[in-house]
Image (cartoon, rainbow, N blue to C red; front, side):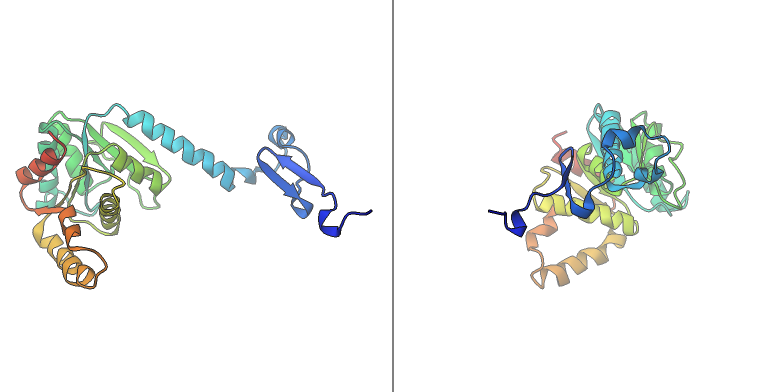
Length: 249
């Protein structure tokens, strides 16, 4: 008795854990394609190869940062000019955090990031910069002692959280807001615990805090206790005291 059409033996190709049938079967074998020097080089741009690059970024990041002491990630605008009050606040924060025994982690770029790295280095602390590949990226600033450049934002953001015990967030733009709200979400959902978040600059952050309270919370999109996920201050010593207290230092 013949098999029904749907049960007829299929031509199959097994490539490791991947099964291919019908029109999706590829000619040759994996080894053949690997050893073929005249083959198509487009494979380096495929998603499976990207997975390997993503894996390598995690390995490099973990290897570079695994032996850091307790650290604080400092965020803020790359566009903050040298010599402005915000820049000087970044220097003071970096210096005070290093004096308190923290390594200082930034995005490695100019502006506030450079300022915090500068302060940490001047205080003989560990100054870390986690850069990102961008069309307008200016490279790792000169005050970084340990620097890692990343292709992928999500790998870099993992490093900011994994190797930091808290965040201090100075005035910044979309990238700073992205990092801030990711940290708030991780704390709110308890993906991380005992993770202080300090917003530095009351005038800059007051509008955001008002919007969260008067719109987001007022409309039931968040709860009143979510305002307790962060602190706002204008004082460097207070900011360092806040992160020190919540990290048990």
